[in-house]
Image 1 (cartoon, rainbow, N blue to C red):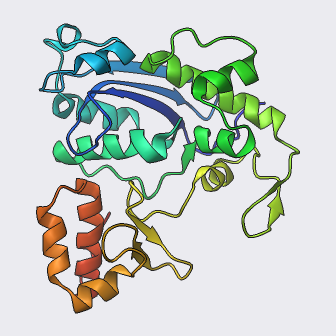
Image 2: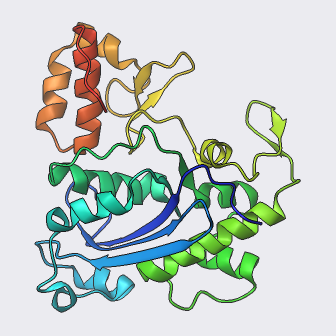
Length: 272
């Protein structure tokens, strides 16, 4: 099945120094862009993270300090990456929980306001987990009937994710799914917006899921002493909570969302 694209879609995968978007850094990024005419373009960049790569991390993705020595920093590469992603929707495997938050933190540290609000986001892992719970390697074996021998190579993982999603479109095109509200539909169809909606777990306000939207579209904290309370309510009766978050070890994108809410409460607005 050919993707029904209204604009290009970019499958991307990151290899990093670790799993914490605040402290860890990207060491490799690979992007497979599928254009509206079906043509594919893939680019892969090694990135100097500016800090040592832990040996246990190198053991997973096989990228060492020596491999990235002399490579450009993410800040140096960022304009090129942004240009390649112009007008693209985004897709990947587990990108909502990891790759996208990590990428956004790197863009913000580089001083680039990368817009994701106008893009559809598809997490192929979430579609797969709802249909057939497995890892990317398991998904590849299940759908492609062969082994993913080069797992944890960003280039191989992006291509495998693309191939798995294409196979999903064929396998699940007539399969009904009943959500937790009892609504039955056929969600895996050749429609980017529908796939984006289905692959999301919650409707997050930020990228890490620390702030989500409730049923009325209001932002709600999902952490700390004010968990499940609306952000605006907390800021009204405990305004110092905002200051504490700004000084604490939270992702920059989460801080950006909270700042936008605070400005909105004062009658000002900023673009996210």
